[in-house]
Image 1 (cartoon, one colour):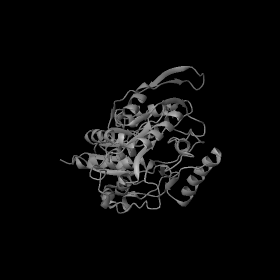
Image 2 (cartoon, rainbow, N blue to C red):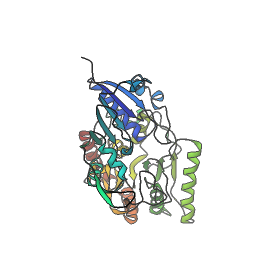
Image 3 (cartoon, one colour):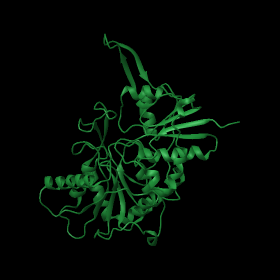
Image 4 (cartoon, rainbow, N blue to C red):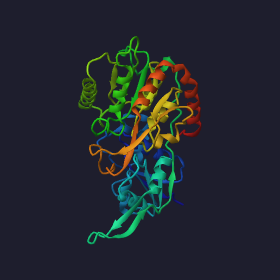
Amino acid sequence: MSKPRFVISCPFDTYSGYGARSRDIVKAIIETEKYNVQIFPQRWGNTSWGFCNNHPEWSFLNKYVAPQDWQKTQPDIWMQITIPNEFQPVGKYNIGCTAGIEATACKGEWIEGLNRMDMNFVSSNFAKKTFEGMVYDRKDQRTGQVVSQVKLQKPIQVVFEGVNLDIYKPIPKKDIKTIDLSEIKEEFCYLFVGHWMQGDFGHDRKNVGILVRSFFNAFKNKKGKKPALILKSSVGVASYISREKILDKIKAIKNDMGPGNYPNVYLLNGEFNDSEMNELYNHSKVKAMISFTKGEGFGRPLLEFSTVGKPIIASGWSGHIDFLNPNFTTLLHGKLENIHPSAANNWLIQEAQWFQVDGTLAISSLKTMYKHYKKYIPLAKKQKFYATQNYSW
């Protein structure tokens, strides 16, 4: 008896969070050996293409790419890994898979997309609860009267993203062979990993602008040794233009704050593979990770970093709260605020809210961790154990 044909539409070959999620899910489905798996490649925004050719450990996925005539017969199972408004029931059984949502609400089209599928997978309890709580009025276009309500009617399950413990783990100093931070003079560096996305200052989703300003405020004019901040970031595509845009943003923040003796901010702008990221996380100069993100469907770099047993400071809201234990990490309080028009788009709507960290608490946390770093290490080791025991691939 032939195996059921399982066609998966996803951006598996892109340098993106959705690309990483896609590769993990496709690999897991292949390894069940229950299905005839075919992959229908998709793009993901403006992120770079060609991940699998550049990463030999993932090149095996290329042989599963669906032939051009894959639609001649209906798939037994169809999965789309994307945002929910794109979901379409192509197969005999249909699965929608999405990282979910980074704010308190979405367009009604997202709920309608989820309802077109037989089953939906999301990455976090935050996403599941948000989708389950959405209710929209459907109005008659001619009269404007409410004719029905749109709410989730199909099953939804949390399928956590997992970290590959064969790659992300503590390694000895002698095994850090690719990542060279010798040009960084500081021995204590905070690390941020993520795109610097659209939005005016203080309104980009990863909140990098506020993070940089908070770091400057925490250590501006500090006497003696100062820590540094490393941004592993781009504006979506790693390029010279991306690098210059981010450097200009950092300079603008400093200029706006006026003269002073500022701590250094360093930019890493380029495509790193998983092993190189693990080397970066393990580097002796990288002491902690920080993220003031406004909202995450999951927050994969925070999970990856936690496996090396170093402290984390992060926003206390949204998807990453599933795997960051508040007893072992510094989760910052704050408030919900409306999504700014400069950050709004087709999936982040102005009617929704997301998180803004308390600025005073953020600055205080940075100072305290730098001053009393050794006190945070035992907790970071506990977070490492918690993450590796519960969120491995």
